[in-house]
Length: 145
Ligand SMILES: CC(C)(COP(=O)(O)OP(=O)(O)OC[C@H]1O[C@@H](n2cnc3c(N)ncnc32)[C@H](O)[C@@H]1OP(=O)(O)O)[C@@H](O)C(=O)NCCC(=O)NCCS
Image (cartoon, rainbow, N blue to C red; front, side):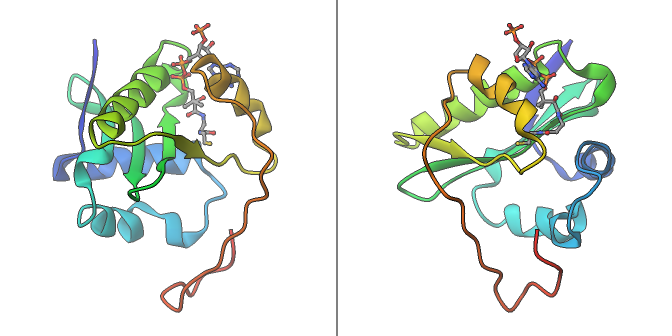
């Protein structure tokens, strides 16, 4: 039985392991130790984990900027995939974003990982005609990603 809950400090190691498995080519700036402390200062209730008997098997970090909702770090342990865990995380994030007044939810898929679009399509997301751009701030000493 998998439950969806807000992240709590005891989930750190599980999330770190999950992200290493799910995002093996991540930039250092995305590491759990670098991102979780800042997320806990901003809408921590939108940082979700999927738990099986207390063990982290999935994650999702969402945010609402007052205009759009965003989904990030959607991940499920390999041996727990295709059992509805990812969908349960997205639905709970959608529920929380809707309650905050969010009208539209966006997400980005990295080049090379386009196959995952099938997952989001099943949940009602559509490809949109957009070009994604980004810029690091002086706090980011890492390579671009
Ligand atoms: C994407 C991911 C989170 C999906 O998690 P999951 O728990 O396996 O997804 P679910 O079991 O809830 O799947 C929901 C639906 O999407 C479908 N689906 C899941 N992964 C899919 C994929 N890679 N391609 C196409 N459809 C997929 C499922 O079959 C299911 O369809 P159904 O409703 O008809 O049964 C998981 O594969 C993952 O962690 N991938 C690596 C990290 C990653 O790339 N994250 C996305 C970053 S943008």
